[in-house]
Length: 107
Length: 120
Image 1 (tube, rainbow over the protein chains, first blue to last red):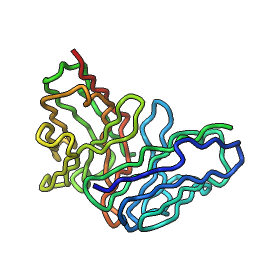
Image 2: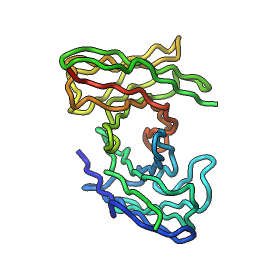
Image 3: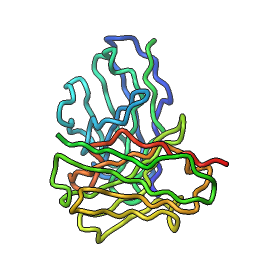
């Protein structure tokens, strides 16, 4: 099983600042990596797939990069609606596995 | 508009059984692999099971293998999760997801979830 590790667990950021979230896999997942945003009481929402492709309707301030075992989600200028928990998921192999999440909170 | 609506979540005793349903609309259901993902209270996301469009291929997490069965009815646009021998650790919100394809299958649309509570 591929283990996904996200860091940091919690990120404190001021509105308007840049946020950088990391996701690491225990073996290569190529570019088969997705990022999801989840707000309290809501279902997760797809942000990025293919490591760097924004899903439909996702603002350009969200960007993804990386391949193999190291991935990054960057939010260029945090808006109030971006404070949430973010998960990465590899879809290169079964079982599909998620990272434990990074909480982005207001500083 | 893609819509996924889960149902069937209730309070059930340990060792009991439950069948979750997910009604899909807004897309050609039989063309898409479907998925269940769960989230225990206050915890992260855990993939549970997946089924191909024609039901020929299914996958399960080790934590549910042999106890849960995924199935679908393409004529009705629905996917199901039969859950047997339930344990306290199966307590979670269960999400139904559609899976899109880009090099491989990944969840794109998610339902709002249904809560399963396993407790005596």
